[in-house]
Length: 190
Image (tube, rainbow, N blue to C red; front, side, top):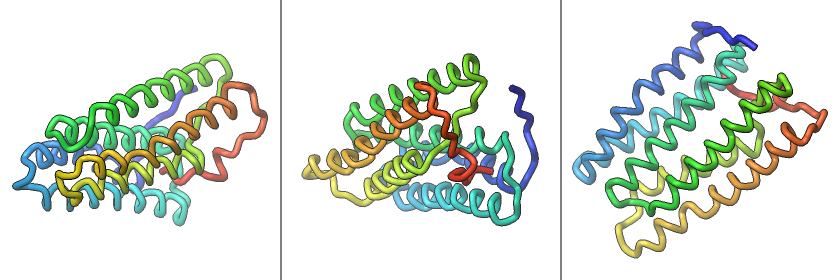
């Protein structure tokens, strides 16, 4: 399967999100002096993600490229935020490790589905819920006090649980051989 880049407005917005990620990491690194600026950029990246999905659906600008590119940028956004937040001591190591392992499994599963089953794995509603919960947890992390640390750690329990369920769902739906494919019904990617 070959997917070519299409320069639609949603795909350009996704590209802008990708380009903003290093700037977000730098601002987080300058914590706490640049916390507000980092939070504003964090919100802008998240808002742009919602906007590109809305535009894609509303103006019929969905594309195969966007369906792959958009969730990839979402994951890079989350992973970069997690790793940088860990490096400045805002979250424990288990959060970015979980995210890296989970995404590694998802990539391997997607490659298997593509190569062996000739099937592209798209996001589902539970996957989108997982993404939303991670984004909300990271957004809250900008404002939760340093102590008690347990509060910061507990922010990530719901997204980790839902993410685990999403991974199991993807495996069952795409790798076990389910004939039901709801990717086109649920996708909001450009």
